Image: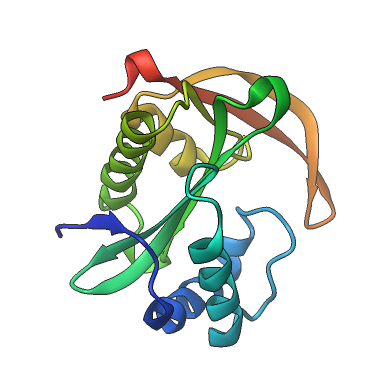
Length: 171
């Protein structure tokens, strides 16, 4: 299945809601997302991404066959970390394990490195999320360590991993 990334469209809200109304996906994301996730929630998120400063927020829909099946957000940090960005991503469950997110994340990182002064993109997946860690590794991110007892998710203390991709090692 061929996929690509593009800017969000308000018409993607229903696809976004369908993907995020899945507990398996939300269990691997940070807290704060409504559950179930509605089309209205999707419209609010998409509107905020479309109105964000394009030099600080790089927000992409992951699409195939005209359908938004996932999301990648790359968010510039501040102060001494102003040339660093954090990436977060997810893909609808029916597309897991097909290489789509690996391809999309590689495309998103290349876009950010080629269109900004960002020199480092990092991610902090839960240590138990082996699939997400594998996506990062396939894109070229390197594991820099374990962040022990770094989060509380669903009432459980969780380790996270710190991964980073440097501009000079961008694919």
